[in-house]
Length: 311
Image 1 (cartoon, rainbow, N blue to C red):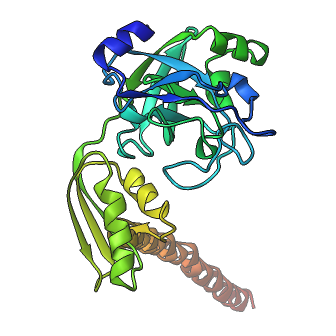
Image 2 (cartoon, one colour):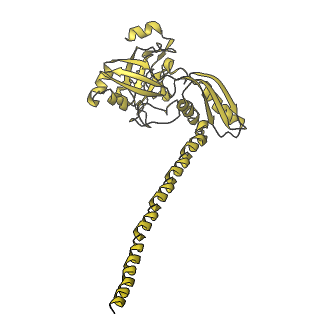
Image 3 (tube, rainbow, N blue to C red):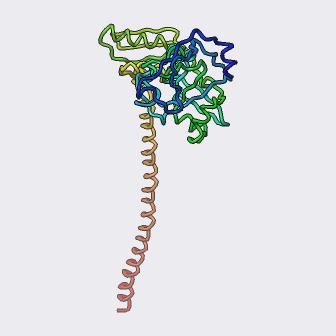
């Protein structure tokens, strides 16, 4: 696999190794510390990523004091090793254009999606900035502990597999960005602030055009990009940013208020109450026997007449 990679991407030169000073070069995760006088290949390129690209998966620590060395290139921060994150060789890192993009890693019968946060430098090494480690090969995927765990590799076998240079398959995330317009609200008080935002977004893969309106505090990005990726790039420069669309939920509120007409239906039973009062005429029938009393009285009046006759 390494030979196949070098046929498509040849070394751009060599550097001579230096012996690390005492207590330098963190050997964790089987890191390759430089050897005095040894020549190491360096690369400015990497084999292109296709739908099925072989890669060498290595184990890396992204936290402060870990073997990863300095903060991550994409956001200048250290990361927890429980995150699904990776560092890519210089060519694939592509001058930060793959920052915060996702790749799929297949191996050990499993698959995992991980986010790119750092570069595994293939052009330099054996110095303090690189923790006196040798330059990365041109097809390295330096992965966090979480990635290895997601691939189902037991921790007691991970360094062993690393030393044997296992073959994994790398592919772009299938949820590729569609061509769209992303608008952010970014507080910018000076030309320099706007310049920092512009420089960061110009390095982003998929950006076709960019407009910054300081008066409206608006940044408009067009291209095959994802809103969350654009947001992450700007925020990595310690800038506060929000998606512009998130501030306009007004139409949705109109739908929430729509049930008002339904209340009219609730009041509709009023006519039914008239039917309840309808029995009033029935009371007239109940009172109808009154004339019968008249007959009783008439009979009573007749009796004195009879008595008078008897008299």
